[in-house]
Amino acid sequence: ILNLLRVALAGAELRQWGFRLAHGTHGLMKRMAQDPAALEKLRDEIAGEWLDAALQTPRPSEYLRILHRCGALVHLHPELDGLFESDQGHGSGLPEALVQLDSLPPEQRAWFLERTGSPEQG
Image (cartoon, rainbow, N blue to C red; front, side, top):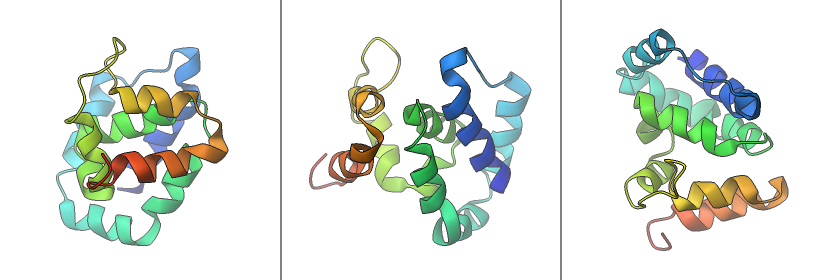
């Protein structure tokens, strides 16, 4: 299950150079994400640390997008998974909030996600 986070973080790091997940890798990640108990245990233990690392990458939105597409984000960060359903996108296939996230300096990204991802704000 930890490999879900590793692949998503690699995607956030390498997206600027055209990195994309292969269909087979995505399918494997979807199967791995079908274990909500393991994902919730991971959430409780280290998911926040991995999100912090993703926020320092050039494309933190890619980390969230990969986890959302395989079904893991709803278990790891349910407050952020809603961003994909509450926004129409911005031509890039990403919700507007995530387009904005990528454009912010890394030191402002956690604050932005807290504000945007919380139900009472977003």
